[in-house]
Length: 326
Image (tube, rainbow, N blue to C red):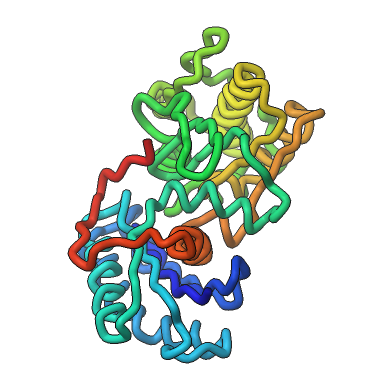
């Protein structure tokens, strides 16, 4: 089956083609225009998607050697995400589906992040634990089977990626903050400052990062002429320590020995390195770097999985900015 995937949940415009579980073409265009604002401006993001989509779909099909007539389905992000950007992608996908008389499926963005790991390791099998860490979500999922997911814990306030972005702003770094803090932290001492690790009572699988962000703000207000490398390294280490500890507890609680780490923060090298030491003896899977951030390959892959089982959306399906997975 050949499925076109479209992703416009935030500020990445992405298109991809999946054929029989294999991605044959994938394009991602990041909207650098938001850097000067220090964050994503929803209206601008929507206009950028509208400007890029037609050309990107054409280029993606051409690169994959696929004509529009060969497509057998369309998958598009239904939510969660920004309302305006979701509308842009969904309306484009619906128009294409109607014009080509193709079935369409609205895909949950979070579920797609989890299933991106099947692209990273086709031998991945159920059940497993997924640590989903991005700019908008920090969640622990027990993935028991296809469409059978249990939410074990999530952030009560800021997501890990949001903590990176807000921390970067405090440190005077540009958006997006995660990669900038990671770069600044190189060569810094991660034990120089003991930032708080919240909700670390044994076997508590919930997260909280707002206090950490506030602690960084107070530290920078109270200390002058600080070593920014040490500050960034210590702040980053605090986030990673919490993520790794909770993931390890989730594995123990479920007696699972396989875990996947998905979402934009999964690209963080310290997180990857720590997983090798703190989760030794467990099977840990990370998606490729281009599958960590928002992308259409995961949308096309999961969309094909649904469509191949005869599951599709009605053409009038709504966008769901706060879409839940379970």
